Amino acid sequence: MSEAIPADWKQIPLEEFTTLQRGHDLTKTQFRPGQVPVAGSNGIIGYHDTALAKAPGITVGRSGSVGKITIYKEDFWPHNTSLYVRDFHGNDPIFAGYLLKSLDLARFKTGASVPTLDRNSFKSLPVVIPPLREQQTIAETLSTVERAIEAQERIIQTTTELKQALMQKLFSEGVRGEPQKMTEIGLVPESWEVARLESVAKSFQYGTSVKCDYDVQGKPDLRIPNIIGGTIKISDLKFGNPKPNENKNLRLQPGDLLFVRTNGVKENAGRCSLFEGEIEDCYFASYLIRVRLDTYRLNPSFLNEYSRIEIGTSFLSGRAIRTADGKFNINTGTLKTMLVPVPAIEEQEEIARVLALIDSKLTKARTRQSELQELLRALLHELMTAKTRIHSTVFKV
Image 1 (tube, rainbow, N blue to C red):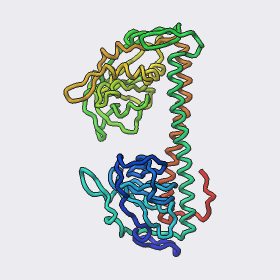
Image 2 (tube, rainbow, N blue to C red):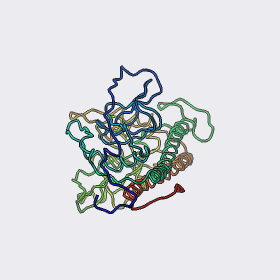
Image 3 (tube, helix red, strand yellow):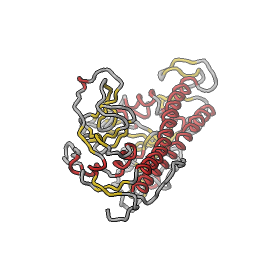
Image 4 (cartoon, helix red, strand yellow):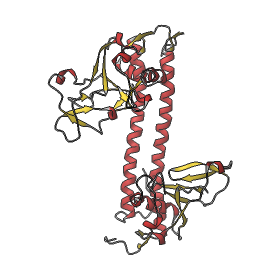
């Protein structure tokens, strides 16, 4: 290591810091009922009745999720798809886990078809090590941030489950406590209509087939990767130059719904997202279909949410046709026949508002989680290179 290190730190080969060993064979048929985690390359792959490694322990993905570091706080069976730390040589095990994460061991993998990590290829890698007390302080600091990340993940999971349950309830019971009736799409409140989408839409339009790419000087062109989870993701944009007649006809406006027309996964055919003006002067590609609604009859946010509950999703994907190249297609004809619930527009707006409040909470949690993950990456680098030193564990997030 060329940079100067603190006087009380030392530089040693990785094999003198931790001794790694290949995990032990254990086929699925050899698993016996028990509570001991079996540690594979990507984490726990099952449970067994015998532990071969004491906690706290570390595994490194050997094949499969090559280089992935997992920290275990209970005794475990290290599977042969992983390497595990057999000897910490007196170092703090949790600190060791974070140091190994900072090394990006996946860069040492070999093999093209089945990448594998050989511990001998990096055992001489030089690492710099602080005294044990500072190791423990660093480990506790980084663990504090990881616990905060995990807390946000629990919020995201719980809120997502809440929304899914609430969506099923709202689209079958409404918000006014009405008696229900049985329809072609299941139980709905008595006052609701069930209509074909074509009767409440103004237009159905295929997108542009003009070539687009990342380095083209042109206009944003939304594609299948931008249609995720009911919203438009603009982190992966390509650009193109629509034909003159497309400049007006294919420009998106807030309230437009984009449906995935073709996909290699059947369940994704008909996936839908609502465009809310996330980016200006924007177009959409030919693998998408735009539906523009009569907003006096059907609220775009309401339909966007309905399209993502089971009955809404299955209507389109269930009618997708497999093509010669193995993909699944829907077309405007399929979309026009989609059956949708049509309550009073005021009730549609109320349901959309309720679900938007939950989405707002999810967005905040995901943003906070992303900020914490960035903080963890920055701290991992700063603390492991001694650019930042923490001498007590009063770190808060």
